[in-house]
Image 1 (cartoon, one colour):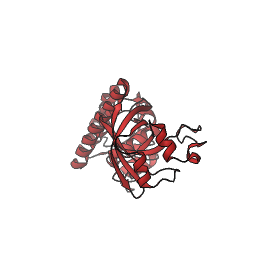
Image 2 (cartoon, rainbow, N blue to C red; image 1 turned 90 degrees about the vertical axis):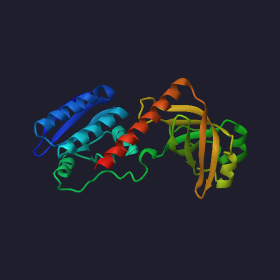
Image 3 (cartoon, rainbow, N blue to C red; image 1 turned 120 degrees about the horizontal axis):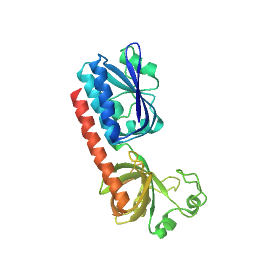
Image 4 (cartoon, helix red, strand yellow; image 1 turned 90 degrees about the horizontal axis):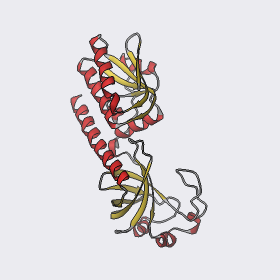
Length: 275
């Protein structure tokens, strides 16, 4: 990763380019320390050309923000790439380090001429939902509960190709850790009631699932989970499932993800309390 400093009238812009991972965290802190030593207290971190960022790098941004705040200054983020914005908003970092769509907006905010314009991530924080594809391993359950009209010729919402008879439900994952996951499902186009969804995904049902780990370069992960809890809701069902089949590489990735989330949650909580 490359870091270049662009002085502006009342603030400085740090332009980052490349992949921002653990190796480059000291470089960012060194640049911030140098700016503080030179009397610069207001900094915009331009992430337009950063295509990948990991949890340690997000922690480094929090640390840089604390350094500037401790010296009477402030750090904001400007023009993040789509990947960076998605990750930053997903973990709730934008509640601590605001995001702006341009360096000019960032500078105006740093100068106090505009109110905070950080994207509102609500109360979802680290539990922000993400798409999960699932299907009972017992195909008979699908054939019994899901109408043929919902199983044939429907497009896969993730990749666009047809599922045909290989039906998959699309849920929203609300939590993930090393032991399992939680997700909700509104039934999609099946027309099933919450009671029927609960029967289809009853306790003990094994599901093939496919999900993403956004903080890791590894794309979609696949596993088999077993349903442990089912809660019928007005808009569908909420499920708790534990991993029953997980290849070693995916298990390591999930454990790393869970560790990253715990680390970031702690850092964000501390940063919020320190404000």
